[in-house]
Amino acid sequence: MKFQIVSDSSCDIPPELIQRWGIHMVPFYVSFDGETYRREGRDISAEEFYQTLVDRPGCYPKTSMPTLYDYGAAFCGPVKKGLPVLCICLNGAFSGSCQTAVNAAAMMQEEFPRAKIHVMDSQLATVLQGLLVRQAVLLRDQDLTLEEAVPRLEAVRSTGRIFFTTNDLDYLSHGGRIGKAAAATGTVLQLKPMIEYRDCDLYSAGLVRGRKKSVQRCLELFREYVAKERIDLERYDIATGYGYDQAEYAAFNDRAAELLSDLGRPWERLGDFHISVTIGVHTGPHPIGIGLLKRA
Image 1 (cartoon, rainbow, N blue to C red):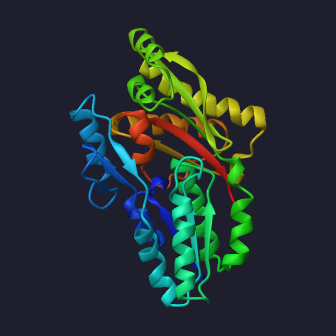
Image 2: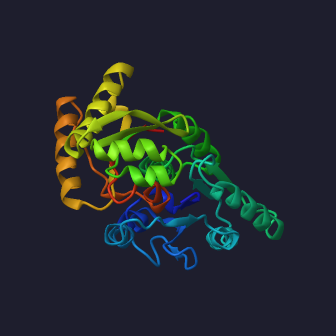
């Protein structure tokens, strides 16, 4: 292979795919007490994270980005082998992870002047970042060089969209996304937020009363977007993601498959994407949604 791929754990890629694709994953950290921080995917799994949220209502965990050491350790192995590195990080507007990777790359290049390390701000989050990493894997496996792969990946970053919802407004309120009064009113009326990720940020896509309707609305928003933008789904990768409720997620995937079949695009699922702690701390235990990204 012409280059090594590194990403941070906000990309939601399932553990079995990380291994299969030959990716080095740098962990975010999460803490439930503000003191003890555990590495995502190593010290605490996605299942354990969401189970803890369910078991401890009213607990608002905090996250911490990867360290210089974390990125340095990820870069060191391939650099010593003379292998270029492509590091794809969470949207820089959401976290300092990308800048930390840039700093770690600079330090590594001081010690190894011939090292090639390209740090890419994915401009994406959650499953979209995972889909961009997937495209990098495909380009790498087609024997493209780092210099050939980077512009192709950069060209598709802006095509990413996610449509998702969550069940609990308290977490959005605690994170400052909505006011406390709005959260209290929404809870009483059983209103669920519809959220769209586009253009490097999160945007409101309306409110829906009831969980079942809001979950279905995710797929309706997806369909409406595809129709409005005249998207050729054959040129896109599609993924779904979730937090705690595996049964709900399985039913959601069945409906997503039916929708895509109606749109003439049989769905080749990559796997079950658990939404990472970087988003989960803001959504609570029940985020669920669907995203798409154009192929590089």
